[in-house]
Each structure stands twice: as structure tokens, then as C-alpha cells.
Length: 356
Ligand code: FES
Ligand SMILES: [Fe+2]
Image (tube, rainbow, N blue to C red; front, side, top):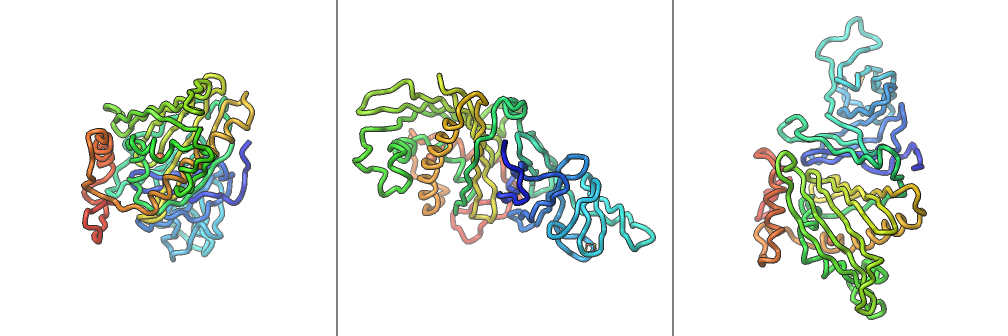
């Protein structure tokens, strides 16, 4: 069982299209510490007594106190710590002002569309205020508890959000960055070390956007093989299906002939325009020893940290110099463009221009 903790160890909200939170820690009556959107909005997340999680603006419309700092959950409302106004999670309506005769109709706080699924809370964000246009799919094995939680990793990456999922369509980097044995670690200076040179990961991958009505999704199919002294050990082959859902969520499903099935949920949450928080959570078949998912998560972490070094130090090129074999990158960028709108904020100082 994942632990329930009053200290939620993730920042909860993602922007650019939608947002998310790890809700395992959000017990009833607990208010989440502040979460900020990349546009600078502060949010308060709380679980009301009806069992539902709600997301509201953190700043009270009365005199601006922060509901997430010292506020209380009362029934299905959040109560401001400053003068005790209570706002309903469902629609933000103020239903009690303890010292006033009447609660005016305009006393309301902004609520954010959210849904809780697969152990996470997702908050919809659209810079034009458009309502949610798609749902986050349920992973039945998680909700039925057939697959159980085995831990997570958290990283902060200095990069624009669009660059992280681009990795899925960047087939050529797989064999350059991820071929070296994980025993060589994640420091790019040493991954070519001779020590473990006889072990190699080989990757074959394809990336495709999904057709309507799932055009906000894309699929990457990866076949991973391990060779030792050039010999292929098919026992260690793993097939991974990576389903990208929107701009910042990926379902990585692993299938192995003997070691069973599981999933890594990968979420990218913008904290600032060029700072992303990335969480990987692993769920694995209940009847398998915990060492298997723990090992997979560790291996994934080492590989991911190799990418992080690249991201932390790279530049965004709007017009990259691509060859035919890189064509999935262009297709990916066309696909990702749907998550921006005319009103998306732009970096004006970047000559190539990137929305965020
Ligand atoms: S500032 Fe929130 S009730 Fe006064
Ligand atoms: Fe990568």
C-alpha cells in the first residue's frame, strides 16, 4: 500500500492544457499545500467530506488570504483562515460568512475542472477558459487493484514542456543515449565506459498520432532487447507501449513474457515556463515480487536521467536540421501544436518563438 502522508511530496498542478496531482497523499479533510500554475495562479486542493477532491483558487476573494495555508475543510467546503468564509468545492459558492447577515450572490471563488483517476488528480487548464475536451482514460488494472503501486521517482528538469514528450518521437536518440548498459549509470561522460561494454540495450520504436476522436493521443511502440557479448537474450525482451495522452501524461505499459505486466505513469507538470516536474509512478502485477517493479523503476530512472542532462543543457530549435529518419519529430511537433492556442503566452526573447 502506498503511504498516506500529510506531506504531499509532489507539486500538484500542471498547466498547458491540463494539470495533475498525485492524490495518494490527499486524505479527507486535508488541504493541499499551494500549487501554482505556470501563469502564476495559485491553487488550493482539498478533499471534502463527500470524498471528492476539489481544486479552487488559493486566494480568498474577500481579502486575499491563502486558503491552502491554515484553511480548514468543513463539510464540502473550504474555510478561509482569515475571516472564516466558507466556499463550496463543487461550484465555489460562498455559503457562510460567519459575521454577516446575508451572503451576497457574488461571493464566489473560482473552481477548476478536475478529475481523479488512476490514483491521480488532473486539473484541466486551458488559457482561453475552454471546458475539458477529453478525459484521462482509466487504467482498469490500477483501479481494480490488480496492479499495485511500487514507488515513484521525481525530477525537476530545466526545459520547455514540449521537449520532454518529444523524446518519444525521437527514435534516433534511443540508440545514442539509451543503448549503454544501465550499469554505466546516467552521467553522459561515462556511459561509453568499456567496463560494461559487453552489455547493450537495443531499441526499435515507432511513433504515431492516434486518429479522431483520440487525436489528443499518440502511441509509441518500443521493443527493447538486451545483448551480452553481441548475443541476444530473448528472455530479457520487453515490449513497451507508450500512450501519450495530451501534452503531459504518458502511460508506459510493460509486457514481459515471464515477468508479467505493469505500468509507469509519467507526468510532466510545469512549475515555471522552463521548469518541469516529472513524476514516474510504477504499478505492477500484484502476484510478482516487488523487486521486479523496483528494478524497472530504477532502470527507467537511470535512462531518464541521461535525457535530463541533454534537456538541461540544450537549446530549442524551431527549425531543426532533420534527416528523413527523423521525420517522426516533425509529425510530433505538428501533433503537439494542438495544445497551444492563439492566446498562449509566448517567449518574446527567444528568436524561434515557443508558446508556453
Ligand atoms: S480573506 Fe478569506 S475570509 Fe477574509
Ligand atoms: Fe530518452
